[in-house]
Image (cartoon, rainbow, N blue to C red; front, top):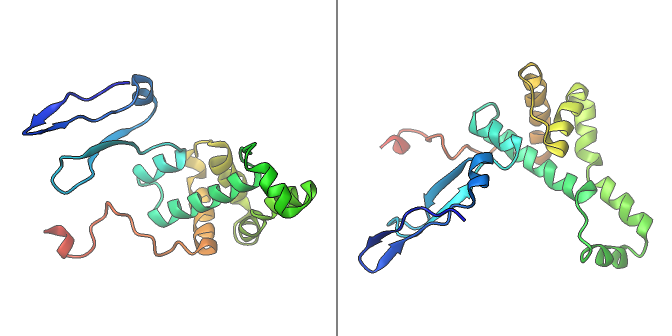
Length: 173
């Protein structure tokens, strides 16, 4: 594990674990303060998915990002990795293996139907991005934005604000 140098301030040692060099080559890592005095700090990966990179580069808004994350949650439920410890509990609760599979696929049926009704051309771009981590080409960026807007309306994430953008005059002080 790679570590930032330790700085001593009185009785406390400011030491932050920042992950392996390989993690640093593949992802953007930021060191942030956890407390208001800056004594406690942590390293955080901020670009784990191409959707995160699109938000960082301001290709999409915070509400679109939140809608994409909501859809990824449902995709993980519907067709994502299955935990061996969780699967038997789901089967017992549903009392049928077939019903479990159907229930998982039904999780994404409503947002996909919203996309189908309002922006059918964006479905391959959105599913490629969210389910397969496929980066969005510049020529399909407008389709992606349109699809994320539809999902934002579906999941109700229109009010999500970008925390990096100041709000009004008071935030500029």
